[in-house]
Image (cartoon, one colour):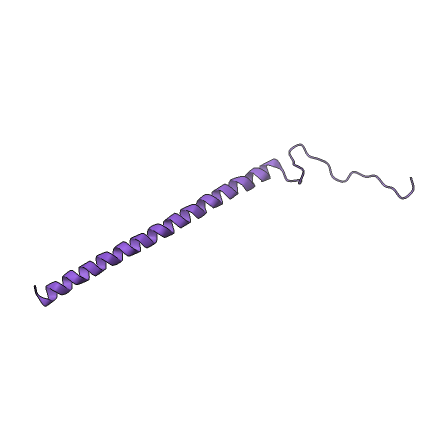
Length: 75
């Protein structure tokens, strides 16, 4: 047939999917997504705990200030 060329330029590899990515690469993507989501959850938990600790420390400072002021001015 004139004008028609048939050539195979890409071969399907045994460990590849339709998108052409290897199976280990896809597993790495899924694993990395899980790890990233777990890290984000940990980040939010630690941020919450930081602000709870900050509020608790502020309460301790205020109570200490009131007690020290009462002691300074005399009972």
